[in-house]
Structure formats: C-alpha cells, structure tokens
Amino acid sequence: MEIKKEDTVKDSIKENKEAIKIAMAEIKAEQEAAAKTKEKETIDVKEMVKEMMAEAKEEVKEVKEVKKVKAIVSEVSVKTNKYNHFGKLVAYKETELEDAYNEGMWFKATQMGDESAKTYCEENGISTKDMSGDASGAAGGYTVPNQLLARVITLASEYGIVRANSDVLQANSDTLWIPKRASNVSIGWQASQNDEKDDSDIAFEQVEVLIRQLYVLTKLSNQLISDSIINMIDYVVKGMAEALAQEEDRVCLQGNGIAADGLITGIVPAIIAIGDDNLSIVNRIGTAWADLVLADFNIVMGRLADYAWSGREPQWTCSNNFYHSVMNRIKGTNGSTWSLESKFSKQFLGYEVITTPMLAVTENLANPSIIEEVCMFGRYDQVAAFANRTGASVKTSTEGEAFRKNQLHIRAEQRFGYTVHDEGSDDAAGSMILLRS
Image (cartoon, rainbow, N blue to C red; front, side, top):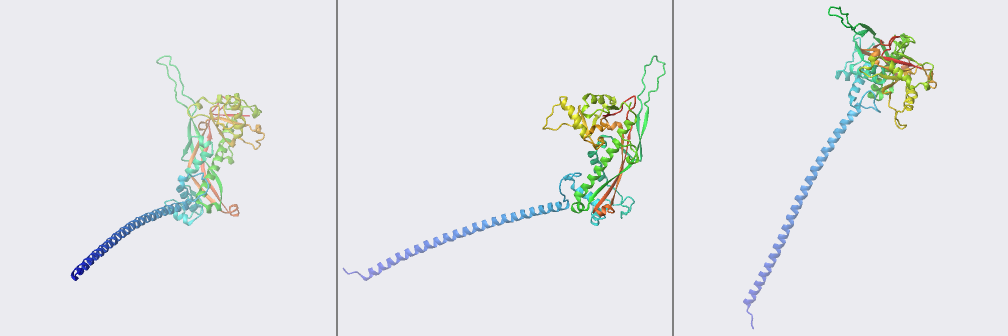
C-alpha cells in the first residue's frame, strides 16, 4: 500500500506539536517549582530578618539593663567610698553614716585644720568657728555641735549608771537652786467653830547644785585618722562618752568633796558622814560575804523611806563580784528557779540590780570581804540632784607625748553638778540605804 507524502507530513507535524506541548508543560512545571522555591526563600529571608530584629531588640534591652546596673553599682561605690568604715560602729548606727561623716568632717576641719574638710563644712552649712569667734581656731577650742554633744551625753548615759538613773535637770547658770520639801503640812481637828486654825504651809529647803567643769582626755592614733573618718569620729565619741561616764559615776558615788573630785561629795561618803547611827546604814562590818544572808537584805529594804516606794522603783547597786558571789548565791539557796545553762536575771528580791566597779573600792578581789561599802538600795532620782549645763568644748594637741607617739590628744570639757540631799539621819532613813559588810 502506498503511503502518501501528505499523510507523512501531517503525522510529523502532530508529533512535533505533542513534543512541544510536553516541553512547554515541563518548562511551566520548572517555572512553577522555581517560583515556589523563590517564594519560600523570600519567606525564609523575612523570617530570618524578623528573628534578627527580635534578637537585636533583646540585645539592646540587655545593654540598657547592663548600663543601668553599672550606674547603680557606680552610685553605691561612690557612697561606699565616701562612708568607708570597717568593723562594727558603737556611737553610730548604720543608718547614721551621713551624720557620722558630717561630724567627722567638722572634727577634721576644726581640730586638724584640714582644708578639704573646711570646704566641705562651708558647703554643707556646718559651723567651724571657734569659741572666740576666730575662724582660724588658733585657741584650739570649739563649741561642740549640739547633735554631736547630744550623742556623747546619750552614750554616757548608757555607759554610766548615775546619770542614766537620775532626773537630769538643765542648768542655765553655774548655780542651780532646787526646792526640797522639809516638812509636811500640819493637820488638826477643830474643837469648835471659833477655834483658830494653825498654818499648814509646807516648809521648803533650798538645795544648791554647783556646776563643775569636767574634762576628759582621749588619745587617737594618726593611723586611724587616715584610714576612715567614720571610724575616727566613732572612736572619739565613744572615748569621750566612756571617760565622762566613768568619772561621773566615780565622783557621784565615791567623791570626797575634794578638788580631785570636782568638790563633789558622793552618795556613799555623804551617808557615812552622818555617823554610825544613820538609819540609812545597815552595818554588817566584820561579816564575810559568805556569811551575808537573806535577812540582811530584807533589813536594807525595810529601812528605805516610805516615799521612795512611790513612783519609780528602787534599785540595787553593787559590784559585779558582789552580785555573782552573794546575791546569786542567796537566790540559788532560797529556791529561785534557774539553770546552769542560762543566765541569772539581773534582779534580786524582785528589783533591778545595777552593777558598777565604783562599789568595788579595792583591787583585792581575791579577798572581797575587806570591801566595806558593798551594796546600796534606793532611788537615784531622789537621793541627789543631778544638773547638766549645755555647752561643751573640744581641744586637741599633737605636741609632747602625742608628737612622740604619732597621736592626737583630744580634750573634751563638760559641765555638770551633783548634790546629795537625802542621805538620811539618826531619826529617819533616806531614799538610799547602804549595806556595809
């Protein structure tokens, strides 16, 4: 059979069309796949950029936080450097570091002539003028700022017992007169309407309190001055307060009225001076401490004047040795409940016990029975008048011994007075009873 040429051409054309159609489909498929791949890559890039932006924001946030923390650390560091101190402070609390720094700068400006401290005081309104009005401070005497003085006096009350337990009166001059009741009102019964009535005015006496000037001397190492201004002023205040309290207690309890005692006669000598018949004395001289018994202390309490039981409670006063050797022995042998693993409460027969070395007037503590004035019971606020006059001054020296030992000697002066006026008599005991052993 003969194939026509025309049919062959048609078949060839048909095949070509099919091939072209398949090729076009493949090209389209490839284009669609490429488009999808491109679209996917575009989405991936967008996601990647989005993630990078989020990470960048977090990094910026972290940087800001780091800067903020660094700023806080820097601020704390500045404060720490400014108020640098070591160890535990005594005269100042941690919340009073600014006060301590200001008072320390006042001290350096007035007592040490430190120019940077003077500038600081001027800028912060802290007066550095001396008592004579000479800003150069040539005389070396400066009125202590009220805040610093109050701190010394407050701390002295914590260290001492007499000031802390007395009613401290404020004196405006060097002599203070205090009224004291000498007798009660008179009373009587009226027999008839026309009978005359006796006067019933209360008789008063005047108690004179003379203000004396006391100075205390504190030695300060130049090394401490250079190490920390906070520790320096803390040491100065503590030293002045301790010395002031110790000397006040000594003269107010044991002063003999001589110049070395500021002409102050203390409670113990004032009571003894009345004589052995003074009802404010319970005399057990010759009795060893080991032989003192509960009945001796009951007699002491029974002697106390009736008016001393009203208001503030009376207190026991003795040495630490007497308290532990005698009072605790009596407590233990008379049924007091206590444990060897716990501390004794500082009370005796229901009343507070104050211990002081000023009633241990001997160094022979191995044989304490030679101490005569061993114990007191009563009211400090009634037995004597304690007067304080505002104003104190501070002077310093770097000469002599201070120069040789690389020290600064600090002398602080304070004015106070003390007069015992209720020491008892042959007829009536007063508001403080003395036990002598």
